[in-house]
Length: 311
Image (cartoon, rainbow, N blue to C red; front, side):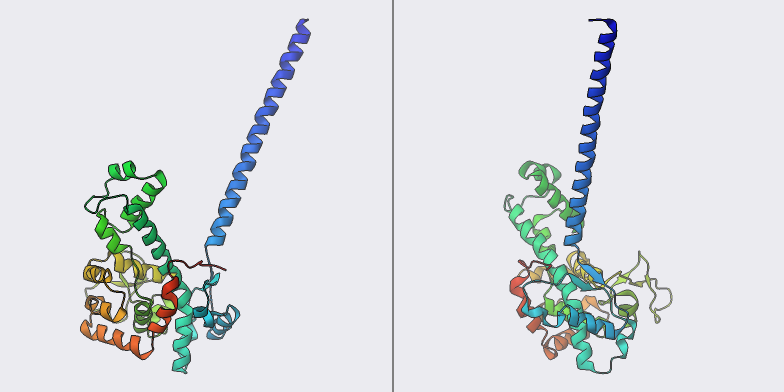
């Protein structure tokens, strides 16, 4: 073979090898784009659409459009969740209509947040069956006894709920009765018409010292608390539930919750939620009974752990 032929063969081999590399890189790039698109598609499917409203008339139209008046008769939650109460919501003169709109506006957010915790709790119980009751969740025994996926989930929960004690973790990853949630939202926000509800989606009167918030008009001198501001009703509900599950003031509430799911029984463990103390708990009981909020709870309770969140 001549030198020219050898050079031509080497040149052709180099071109062939380069083409293989380029094809491989192209296929990898295409595969990554497909994977990214697939993941983003899943994310879009799993996240509900938060619908911002600007007037009470628009809010009523959305409740009608997505059939949110009849939520209690369905096994699925809608893909649309109302983001906020409009500023003119406080002008509604019909008190009964205002209460009905209020409840059906926050129900999808409440059910979604409760279902998220139910799923965490069910998965946690399955995983913890591999441990003895007195065993602490150290990194070593988590990695030793669990799969990589399970270990990551447990480590995530211990950080989220601020405990590595198995029994304490089970106390914290738990829900609040729906009737109690509705009652507190109603009382703290005056049925969605308070300044904090309308300007910051804060339906539960939750304070903050660390983040941006709203300064109460009657805040006493030399005090620094603010009222938390949320981007949506859903975010407010999630933080409300999280506050119960990690807050030091609700340890007795969390213990009682292991033995009862009755809102009226659990209310007695919430005098620290408000400066009004026992007067506050009495008002909560009254709201639960006067407006028959347990009826909503009864309809949804069997489905909380199994709900398919979106249509």
